[in-house]
View (cartoon, rainbow, N blue to C red):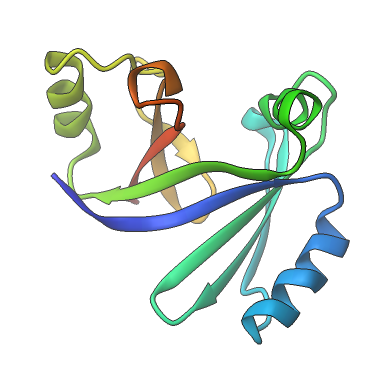
Length: 133
């Protein structure tokens, strides 16, 4: 079961500049900066009340974020949902006919196991499932 929106991921070209923009916009400081080598991204997390924003900057020209920005420009990349049991949720979604981009959960940013649902099966929106480790 999906509990809540865990965060909204935003693809950015320059993470330092974007961090300054979102720190001013949300009137808060970033609480975590992290590199996720498997995804070829640097991330910055900010929180405003119960809401979290993840800024994503490509570290490789062939990363998903670089390709996203080349095709669509900077902007909302994905919506992540918190789940209690990611493997059960993956099985449920597969049974419902959703296309998953991962066969099994993988380590992601912010101490989470993650899996992505293909945008073609979610009305053009990339969905991320997140389970706290």
